[in-house]
Image (cartoon, rainbow, N blue to C red; front, side):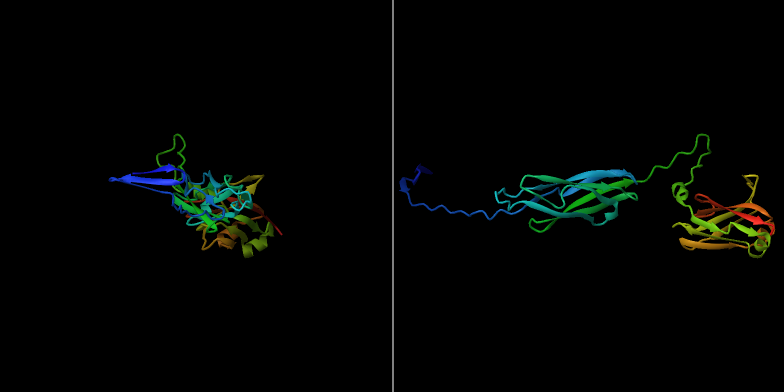
Length: 280
């Protein structure tokens, strides 16, 4: 058994023997100089949301070096950014950390928004550059996404009236539809009609209809109707020069309807322009 007898001596006794000494050496290790240290969560979970519906989470960053009067343990955050597997699904939307220095015990916050563009599990990393050991820290960002709900068919509609892919079709529409808005009957007979437009990504076909306009009303029955196969998105020019169309372009006002689609049955929104054919 050992026990101190006073502040300057130590006594050991047992087995019929007793010894006392005041010759003791205490060994230890001095702490190093104060340095910056950083504390962050290892991961932030955004749980599950619907495609296109954003969720925002806060990532807290804390300075926790040994405090010192000279500020040698102060943590400086140089910047933050998103990388990893799905960086486009996550974005920094708030940041009280970058460009600031924090004494030990103080914290700051990075706000991250998760907006899934497609169903399934997604992940990324939030990179934090700083002046602590290693120079950078990564926080894992993870979330899940479920598909958009399919709109219900109108009341009274037959079963199966909701066509799959309707949201995608409704988004397709050409832009910058241009034509010659005034031409003579002779020119129409010789050249037909020329159109130019910008076709959106995903378009496979164009439905083009020419309709007569009388007294401000568009005749529902087309003068001419046809489809064009589209090989790529972007600028598209087409000449409508069928004999049937040229023959039917009498003097008067016409409306041209252009509707893009992924097929002849799956069509998007219609864009229109008008052409006046004069006698001469």
